[in-house]
Length: 638
Image (cartoon, rainbow, N blue to C red; front, side, top):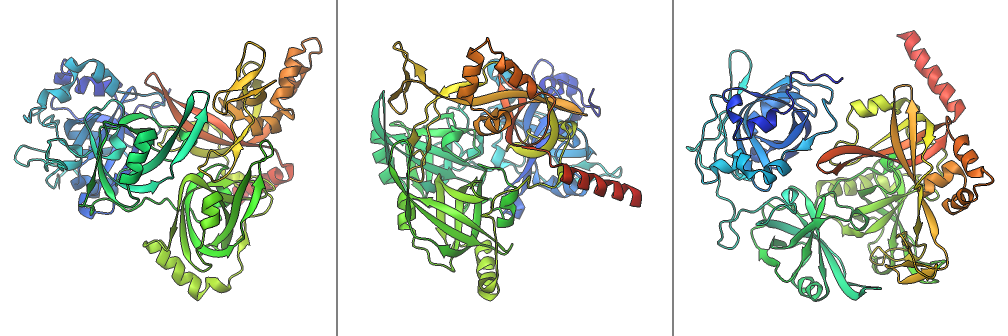
């Protein structure tokens, strides 16, 4: 059983419920920080820590006053730290947030108490009579004993705290938010009393909201056609200092908002529908997206000083070889080679696509090709020697590592950022005469050193997959069970251009069997005499420390089993031969190297980590022996 470090399961629910809050008056809340990030990092006076707090059973969002920053950084505050919340205010937008003004770090480095934690927001949404945050919605300030405070329904982004002091015993005691220091009045774009909400806080459970965001990407108007009809749409991304969110408009609304919105300008947006994001069509990390309809209101904002121009998450070119296939990243480099446009013809439809490969380099002395498609490929006119940033490129692994611009990606010529000036100076003085290492070579094995592999127990204890973004790790494990049922699905194999004119790919949507025995794809409006099956294979893997279930999709399952999903279906249907059972059993207790993607998934308010195999390879016994010899040599010398 995991160590609890004195954290009491259920303490959050008791402390924030009206009927049980009295139990915690005058007492600190001992909690674990399961995730944390710095916000407003560009503005020193407004820089503070946002966190997710857990009692091992429930979780709630937290925002720590900036006056606590020095104490936190001097006392080892980090993810999984055990803290005591001494003074706080409970605030509610669409989520409950503990605004913390006094905190002490009890255990800087701790193991994760529990992997399955339920957020408290759904409970209080269903039981408003217990919601302590609603008790003070009228601006009244209440004192929760000597240490904890629940009070005004403060705007989370408008916290004003007084500097705290360090007492004789070394414990930090920050001053609580009080009525004598009124919160900053929320920004008021149209004379209403509604505040401007950070983009990261948007969810379908919120009714009245307004965001202030810059258009970081504006796509072209595209047409679509399927069995249900035809129409047009366009996509746009809004960006603020907290996050970035995708918005879509259809048909008449597409024309209206396409003409209204300009890339780079800042707008107030409200009354759009918030719905679940579709990761297949967007690389943004926000779990939701906006649908712009006739009730949506968008007005231009001219006060743009607090809105960043664009978010970048640059990866150095030498790091691309260590990223997983299909990862979406941003890169910046100097244009080294601009190849001519050529055509690729889709095998299934015979439709041609324009393609251009552009090679960029950076000061890691690596070069990589970036693929551009159709209109973007034809219109590309940035000369060699220019600094260019690519936002939203996908890592590909065909013939070595390369990049491809995604449908919502963008190209920025000579961006006005420090990285661009540094690269330009390096290239003009040194890089122009360098010989660069190319990533356009066939990969011969795992990119990660064997010493960096993890065990199953390490992956679980380090909380991999429990962050906002997926985690990737390598491990050596054996297959101990292959699930023989529901290992594939009937798919459409039609080549479609799903990336806004930037390259063909297979549809892969599930096809439905018709009464006449044929199979129909609603998306492509095509009928097939038989489907093309694709793997979604579930297997159990073990090592000497534990066991997990992983999923292998089509490419890796084909490599693992050495047979296509369609052929395996035929083997299973031919029960007399027993070949299906023999094949499945022959794969058990074989050892492989796995590259695994871990991502947290929520179902009915319960969080679980799901593992997906990004690559599978047989063991290289020469490399394994060398790694063991190196490890033994280190032990002997020590």
